[in-house]
Image 1 (cartoon, rainbow, N blue to C red):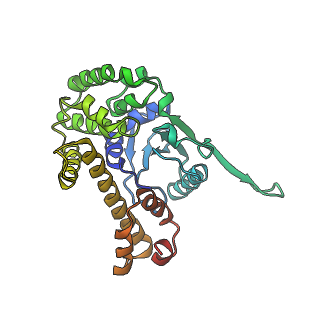
Image 2: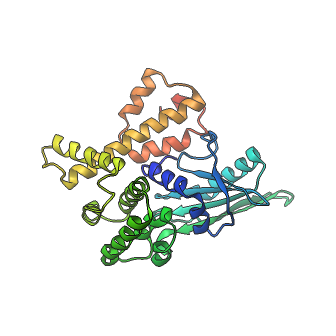
Image 3: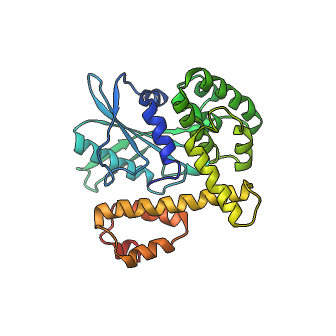
Length: 301
C-alpha cells in the first residue's frame, strides 16, 4: 500500500541499496533495484533488490508506519509470488518506523498446516523495529540510513545533538543532491514520531534543507492551506493540514492508478465517489484491496 513517505524512502534505497542490506545484516556486494511493474504483487512502497551473489537472491524491503492486521500473511504471499516470478529465493525485511505499527501480525512468521498433516507451509521474515535500534550505529552507518537515527532508541532531549551530528556528516560526505534527499527524508520520517512544530524547529536552517525542492513543496502546501484558513503564513496548523490534504490527494491518485491496472479505467461516477473520499485511512485500505478487487463497483460502492 502506498504511503505518504513513499517517495522519500524510495530515494533513500535507490541512493545506496547496499546500505539497506547492511542494516538488515544481509549478504551482498552488488545489487540492482528491480524496476519491473510489481503492482499486482507488492505494494507501491515496497522495494525489491536483486542481489548478485554466487547464490543470487531477492531482498524485499517494506517500510511500515501503521499497523496491518494481515502483515504476516501478506509478506508470505508476496515472497511466494516474487519467487514464482523470478525463480530466486527471497529475503523479506519489514522495517517498522514507529511503535504504532507493531502488533500481533508483525511476528515475523506465518504459515499453515492442513488437518491431515500432508500439506504444510512455514514462512519467516526479518522485522526491524527502528525504535529499538541503537542510535550510534545509525549515526555511524551509511548516509542512506542516516534519516532513521532520530527514530531510533533516543530521547527527545537528545535530538538537537543528533541533528548536529547528522549535519556534520552530510556536509562532509554528501553531494548537494544527496543532501536534499537525506534531509527531506529526515523531515518526513521525524514527523511520524514527533510534533511537527518541533521537527520544523530542529531542522530549520540546516544547510541543504532549504535547497531541497521536495521540502520546499511540503512547506508551500502547508503555507497555502494556512493562508486559505486566514492563518498567518507558515503557521503550524496550516502546515499540518496542508500536508494531510496532500496525502489524501496522493492516495486518491494511487488508488486510481493501481485500480486501473487491474480493473480498467474508472468511469465518471466512480471517479466522483473517489473524489468524495476524504479519509486517508479509508483510501489506504482501498489501495490495498485494489489488488484483489473484481470490479470498481465492489471496490468503491
